[in-house]
Image (cartoon, rainbow, N blue to C red):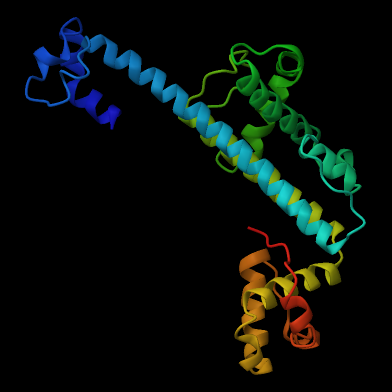
Length: 270
């Protein structure tokens, strides 16, 4: 909205920047309540815009952590021997360690460094902000150039705004936020594959079966086997992007544990 306002009023804002909003917009009911020089509008907008972009980055990173944690909990349902994940554990490093995923073999070196870059940048914003320091500054200084080249080549459309070599880690452009979202999507796709590879097929099947029965406990007893299998197949695709062939599906007993599973509370992947 501000960009459109600025386009429509650009000449006026530059020509009358010292005049107040009540003079320029006398018929606007909000002009007197927010009576400021026109020059202040642009400054305020830039501050608000910067805050929104930083908040968006923090939200995206938080969702990334939540997703990885929930995916690990799904793995724990399939393998109860996996340890509980403490609140302050480093994500995703400690999860990879618990799952015995060899990151040096499973990820490109630049991907591991990017996990560190994004986490450290998030920490700088959360705990202090401003210029990069410590580990983040060292990573930027020593690895920024190689990270820049890597993601320009890795992403389908290259990068649009991110600069891994910049020491200004407090401000964002919208193009940079889009780059970070695309980078996280790429890293999550590989992480998904690696975590799935550690989960036994039987563990995944039992977990999904429990979730399906729990969700349909009031209806499943009235379904015929063919209908139950069809709905279970759709459920697995929607919840886990997992598709069973007809032969495998016929071997899954959806009725034997209905009463037992119905009293349980299976974990569900969001």
